[in-house]
Length: 117
Image 1 (cartoon, rainbow, N blue to C red):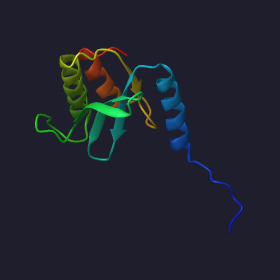
Image 2 (image 1 turned 120 degrees about the vertical axis):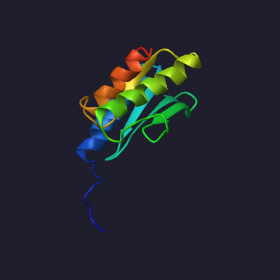
Image 3 (image 1 turned 90 degrees about the horizontal axis):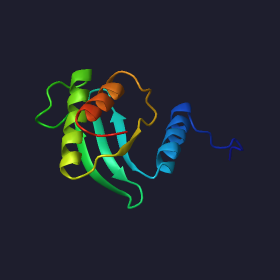
Image 4 (image 1 turned 180 degrees about the vertical axis):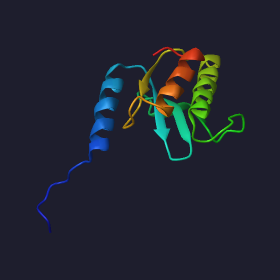
């Protein structure tokens, strides 16, 4: 058996660091996952361990798959759902992704839809 200890890659360390700061705020968390073709976002209540709202570029209303326009539409859709449910304030959890491109477009779409973070 190897004596080399378990080491995390840089993306996992970055995601844990970002998530720890977001969870420390005590607010709901807007988490983003970005794949090669699509983008997914969900609002999570860490106290309950439950997902409250979710939206993705796979939904029928969203036009486009992997571009910034589709990401902006996903952010706006998630904001519309959450504002209708009475959720206005969240913390943005970008995970392991840099705040750039599609992740930034999703955040701007959520802000324009009425979410505050």
